[in-house]
Image (cartoon, rainbow, N blue to C red; front, side, top):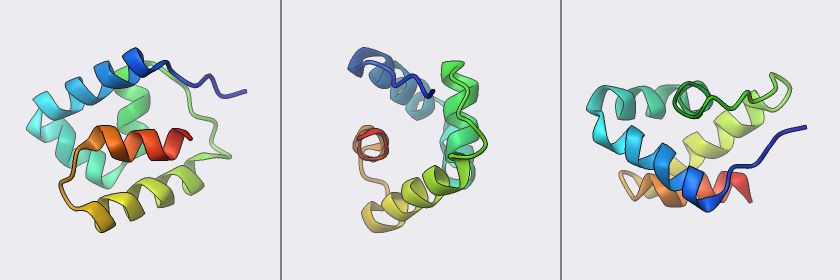
Length: 76
């Protein structure tokens, strides 16, 4: 089962991603891999394609809008 991080954990993940331009760029290309790397959370392979699609859609729709909002939407 996927353990959904708390709001505080999500905020820390977003802070780490936002503070590193290379990581932010990687997030745009491989969001689930970056979330796994930064958080230590294992996202099951079964969910990865769907989550990638949702996050990439949010990035495309929102541009460089706050990544916190993008991550929150995919966790809901």
